Image (tube, rainbow, N blue to C red; front, side, top):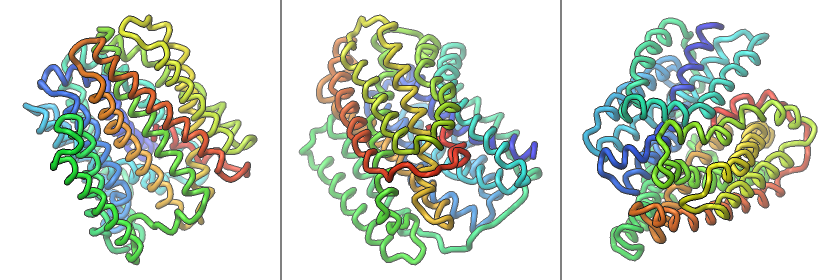
Length: 462
């Protein structure tokens, strides 16, 4: 049990931490590589987009070719691409390395949970899963703080270099300490992956480029057209496939459709807003990376504090009440920030909003896994969980892209006042989207008996 928990827990901690420390480093990366808003968006979105699109594929590859084998491949790819990101001479190389990191993460995260479950006796599985989930929650809480400390104490390149020795140590441990296992030998959905990747890339590329070259430019319109056509092709391919990457039939269940729609809206509004708020503290209020990371702790650390209480309430109140309340608190927190935001707003004025948003995140993430699993047959639990995680990641990609477009239309990085001029309307959009998610959550099925242990991995997805 020890080696299974250690290897899988540290691996998913590394993957979860990486994306969070990057957020803190964005202002420094912008200055160091001489990039603008589009470059920063792709620095985050390249990882998240490849991770989301390949998440279900990573699990399928493990089933077909061996979970331990593909887990080791994921570790090697993540480690090598981290080194490439650290050595990146310009933003284009950094974005490419981040996309490869996302592909490695798409192998690490789903297979780490499968390998852990298989490598631990049934009597001790809940304890092991709790440790695994706690490590993911810890990554959420300390990510901005670690990122700020590394950037300030060393350089932004070290947020990637720190992955290299960890990955090198984990590869032989995974190879010789984890047992190999296989799943269903179903065919690989190449057409599904290709059409989904092309469609999402087309839409995101158009959103990122629209503010720079114009929304009616040939480049942007062609990108949107390609995205829409490819996504339509993806739906057609998945409906006809005997072994689809994304079984569209699951969405005929109202509860499953609603909980996934809510997850997309939450990630869209919340993480799109966080993308800019993390930069606001450094770019406008001139806090150092470490000081900015410390000041986000009332937000990012709150889920770790509130999660045990939310888990206890889950069985009593049901998922609908917690999810709707959590999203309402997040909308109130973001709305509070939008009201008090100025270039010179004292940090103390943001603390209540950060706490409300953090509590809301915990109330959302703890029950969502149980609600997803409760809406599908047991045989479909794996693909249902993977689908929810992938859609949540894609919501974040679209949120950063759309709110980035709003920011670019009203503001810039030219001065603190210009940054706030773009951030305020972007925040208002984020508030509206999260509030819409809170309203949609009321369409979830009513209270039912839910197992809090089904949500042990929820904080990792935060």
